Length: 158
Image (cartoon, rainbow, N blue to C red; front, side):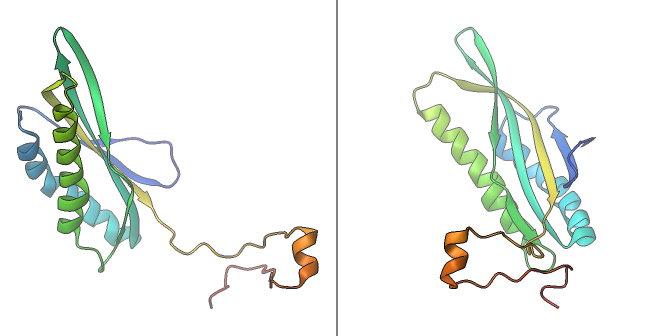
């Protein structure tokens, strides 16, 4: 399911909604193909992306319920250079499953009761930021130890 977003750099926000899974590993395994399909389509379209995921689940402790979210860090992916399977296994599955294990083993009393969604945020990535001139302080510019070239176009590396 795709979710509309208001962020300019956001290419896609999608959610894999759980219907009947109770085991996180099985849910994440089965969500892999859906996630990789959408990431791959957008990677072909934009060449480089920044992707993170949010795993939402419900925990119970005694008579209390709480929805918790596990957010993975943004990871840069490049068309033709990134192994998407490796990215998903290492930075999505392993990170989420490790966090879940550690959270439940901390004697917190909370136990996973149900898996809600896996949200995938796909953002544009511009790995080369160029074309800016930084005004230096008077003290630094008087040292004449730096070169600050003012450019009026975006052809800095041409």
